Image (tube, rainbow, N blue to C red; front, side):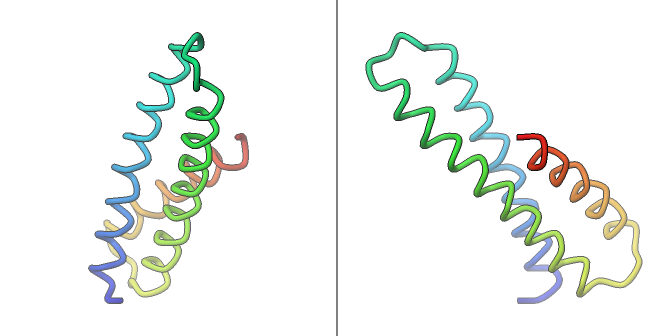
Length: 88
């Protein structure tokens, strides 16, 4: 993959992460649902896998990219998502 493709994949993973986070909040607000536990487990698994993908894509992008403003932003975002994963 090219540098641009890794950046695009990184950004798509971030969008997916926030959509999953939104779904997880909706699931957790409906604890009385009959399949609550199953839905929560699936959402948490997707949440963690997406975090791992964000980190992987970010690292790949940074390994291919010279120092630019975009690389600095990706590095800052990457650090943020690594902290989220470590605190989960």
